Image 1 (spheres, rainbow, N blue to C red):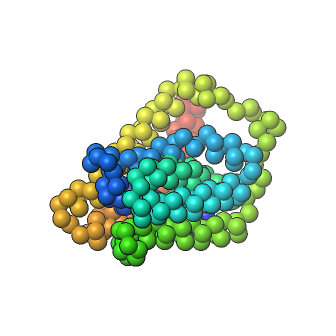
Image 2 (cartoon, rainbow, N blue to C red; image 1 turned 180 degrees about the vertical axis):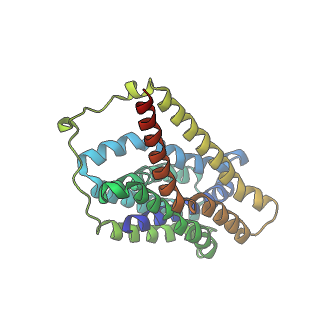
Image 3 (cartoon, helix red, strand yellow; image 1 turned 30 degrees about the horizontal axis):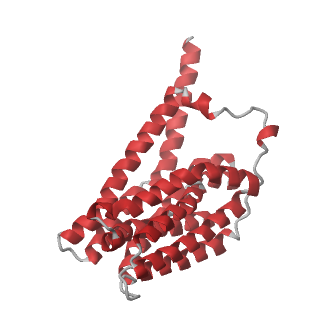
Length: 278
């Protein structure tokens, strides 16, 4: 449950970034088309940081690496606030790229959950941690709306609020005891290289589907705040639209654990039936 709360606080950061990064970029970008680059930098920074996070997880363990990610989250939010106050577009890009390290770390919360429960509860643990995103869906947009004018420049206060959100998550993370990671060299079955994985059609399909899903989501969520502002909708309406979108993303998490388990049981039954026929 603590990890689910950390997931919720992480998505508070994510949804707030989605809600305001494009608008802050629009205020300070040299050219209008560059407005969504801060959101691109956040997503791209996460992708670039993923291999580094994998090495840090192995070197420092789950909890310490997650804590490092949260510290980076605090620092990057502070830089974003400074960028918003000074209307420094390039600092905003650097800060959101840096925040990608926090995002890449937090993307592993759902997988770390399976290490904290028995084998019978792994699917449900993943589902419950994902369901923590509901907290972010509700808190993130409303936090951005409530702190929009807290400082002289619009949305600078929202970034400061995200520093507090990450600090709370850091406190929660310090109370979670993760089991030690298995030494890859001592594993009974050695892991496969990335080159071996990339030759598998299933791996290619998974990558393609994930890229398509994230692409559509980012297109929708990056464009919405700017489009609604251009149509003269108040930011409170934008916040409500993003809240509805993210709720629709995570409310089904309460069911996915059951679906995964029932699908696995069905496949196992069909496999056993095929063996009997053979």
